[in-house]
Length: 74
Image 1 (cartoon, rainbow, N blue to C red):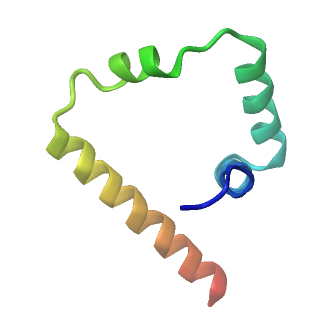
Image 2: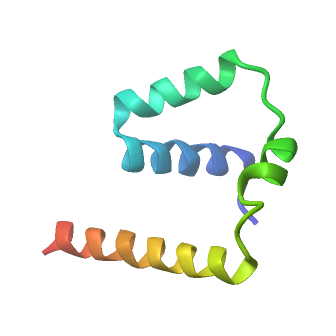
């Protein structure tokens, strides 16, 4: 299990890697500005998707990220 600080660091890194620095900051600003119930949001996020569809999409996304990382290294 990692610490709260490590989770925050990894979260910020993930946002920056995905959105870039400016858009990551904008995202954080939007979340901080608006009242936000994560649990309520999750209940309605993918109501039209099955577990298998979500799993498949997650695996495809992970492959895409891994391929992008490999290209940066090469």
